[in-house]
Amino acid sequence: MKLTQLLSILFIIALSNAPIYAGTVSWNTSGDGNWSAPSNWSPLETPVQTDTVVINNAGSGKITLDTDAGIMKLTVGGSHQLVLSQYSLTVSSAEPLKVFVTSETGHGKLYDWTSSGGHSKLQAGDAICQAAADSAGLSGTYKVWLSTDVNDAYCWIQGYTGQKADNCGQSSLPVAAGPWVRTDGNPFAATIDKLVNNGPVYTPARYDENGSVVVSGVYWTGTYTTGNEVTGANCDNWTGTSSSSYASMGGVDGTNYFWSGMGGYPCSGSYPLLCFQTGAGPALANLSLPYGAKKVFLTSTTQNGNLGGIAGADAICVARATAAAIPNAAHFKAWISDDSTDAIDHVTVNSAGPWYRLDGVRIAYNKAELLTVPLFTAIAVTENGDYRGSFSVWTGTQTTGTKSTFNCVNWTHSGSSDGDGLVGTAGYSSYVWTAWGPMACDQNGALYCFEDD
View 1: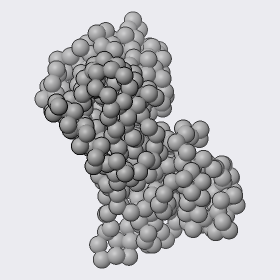
View 2 (view 1 turned 120 degrees about the horizontal axis):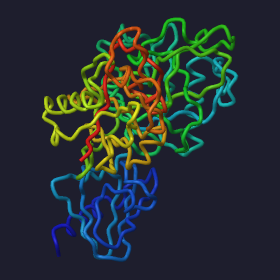
View 3 (view 1 turned 30 degrees about the vertical axis):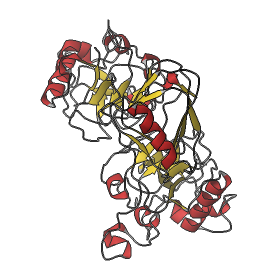
């Protein structure tokens, strides 16, 4: 018996009674293949932490684990070999905590929502979240991410009242909650203290309690990304419906800066809520770059619109990758267009993907997905591994990957009267990742840098 087969059998013995939350993902390839390739699985998605993985189809190929991975259960049959190589496969029967956006929507007076149970204010939000979870068969207790004048969301989802500045009424600030995954099994965020300190928001909330993509672009929060209330932006403590009062929101497709506390929306509108499962859950599976994956990052530095043309933008990417000692640093290119060049052709001359952030979270499997919004997640990790959210990013590029008319005279001008350059915004994965709007050329923007070959 080969060692690789023995390892697989040991996983089966240890976890034969593991619960199943998400779907079952089955290996569909009879020959050799890499774990990270979605085409090798049915359905066509790489397994995630809440999945049960079944490998029992006909064939005798080698399944190469080319990235760190985490799943809930593994069943192997037939003659396949699971080759772990230098990567790790974490199989944990502990069900991860979940976060979701409600499929139900309503205005700012939560008492009027169908699932409020006759409650008002934050208690109504909790009732709505719990009803959604129960209807979807999700176990555990769920609380709403909302703040009022006297209660911060940071405290509320951990079962405390009061404000973060006062340690939620405790002797020290509670930090045990989390981490969380979305209802599709992909990671959302680490523990609460990291979430509210510009820590990683790995993927946008985006999914409802049933594992379906949310249609609404925003959800009610009344809360900054720090977990504190946004003063006066909470629909009169979630009792008002006036179009003249408003609440701050979170972005369904937003990460770091944009997942909570953005903008102000009238309380008469109809939007969902963000719900967190309470408690401290198992650690997220390790994230790592799959073998052969291309890297993408956001530059930590910014500069005005005189980039020295596209060649100068590429040189900035190479310099930042080199300074951070990123492998293959000389082969990074800027996601940028000018009058004669489209970004999608510029960064993909020799590469078809996939592209991953440096923290191991996928951006796009292939070139087509770069042109499909929203992206899987936002390009919000710098070459140094820092998480950023609100940077403007020079692109000159529409969501089709093609040139716009705003390019600071082909990225050679930096004066206030030299026109504009189209920018995207880091931290958001919808169309605004590349086409937020024009910005004056004397302003500073970052760059998106893609590894090509």
